[in-house]
Image 1: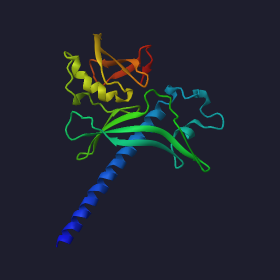
Image 2: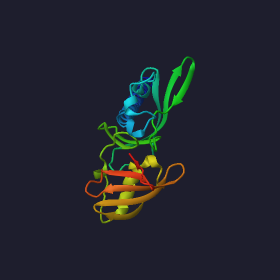
Image 3: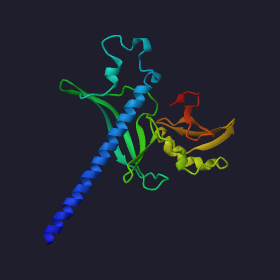
Image 4: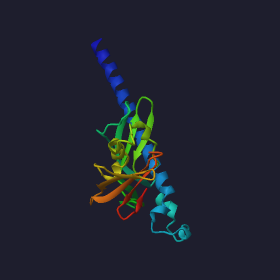
Length: 221
């Protein structure tokens, strides 16, 4: 009887592990598809060494190099993060984009087709029970998450956690409120490998609308 119960426990435990692994694999695949779709959509905006008139010219077709197939794959690592999401039931996952890997004969090479800024780190919140996904930070199509935070125009400090998650990919951890002008909130921070000076701009009428730009006013998507 004990052996039978132990066997049942092992089977059930294995079942839960397989389901959890499948859920994480499915989530990872969705993130990859989101990244590919977004960066394909905005590829020309990123100035990928090609002009619009030259898209179908030459031997190296633009879309053939960009989109993944059986011999090309976007390499991305997935980690469970200790970051907390304000809505209960969600676990935050961090994704690190390593670039594409493809085989040429017996050699494996890597490259990244995008010249987008801050294009390594991504954040996604996932609710295992409801299967709800929130795409938070990174160069992909993002979810509207402002309503999940207790944001108060009269208290700009309430935007700190929101901006930390939404702009996690910039590696900025501290945000300083500067001013509000014509319905726009301005925050300041430093981020990136070289701690560049960044401006974070939030629309006071819709907190989901925001952007980040370098001090010299280059807008980052």
